[in-house]
Length: 344
Picture 1 (spheres, rainbow, N blue to C red):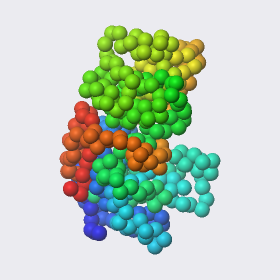
Picture 2 (picture 1 turned 60 degrees about the vertical axis):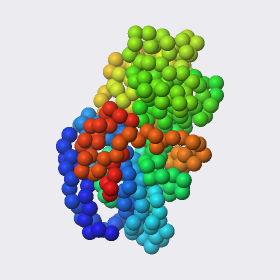
Picture 3 (picture 1 turned 90 degrees about the vertical axis):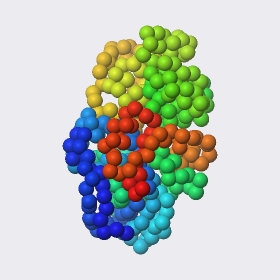
Picture 4 (picture 1 turned 180 degrees about the horizontal axis):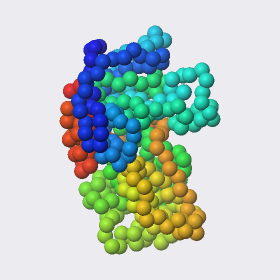
């Protein structure tokens, strides 16, 4: 392994520099991954713009796939050479600590009181040639899953988590507001589980793609009658579940317009901006449930990719080298899925 490596470091909002770094000794239970590909998502865009403020400097990137090239312990030597991805919450469980914090002890490891989050909170991410992670977070990629497909395991797990918190049935009518990178995966998961799904987007091309991925209906947002059209699709009552994946602070307000009484709004956006235009009285009177979710089960995501012909690779529009990360993030605002290839 090289003595030094390059990393794209966010020093301030909108300012990324390519820094050369030296490897520091691994802590117990850690591994080093040579990053093959890393994805750009809405959270990365919010971090880059400064809308989602976190301590800087920071290397972004939390969706990735690569090869294990070093481990701290001989007991973990079996990972060397493995094609992997990794969960992003570095927790007591991930580090296999003898004594867990209160959250981890209650089984809430993604809310570990001592956690860092790869590429987001106090831990450098995958827009770098190499990335160190706790071995407890590693997941091997099956032979049929390519490097590029491996990048989608993290967001697919997040999509699955939506319906882990609020389980769905084939009788459910589900509306997904926003069918970009994450929203499309949410549509696919809901469709695979047998629900009737209506995709809503301002983009006709995104709606066309959602129809090809199994949604029941597609409605163009932004037109004067789009809310009425969504409600008509639900029979006039409103959707059983509305998944808000717009990436906009107005998303929750829009969701409240199309959810049924005693229905559920599932929030997925992490745009870093406060929600706006919310009629709390309406939510209370209609007894609407609101749940949020983020990180999900990697094992289930990997299982889904191996069982279902989910064409996530078709979402990749462009691949950028490490020294063009800033341009890649800007471009990701307007296209489907951008990948970074640090070692290309």
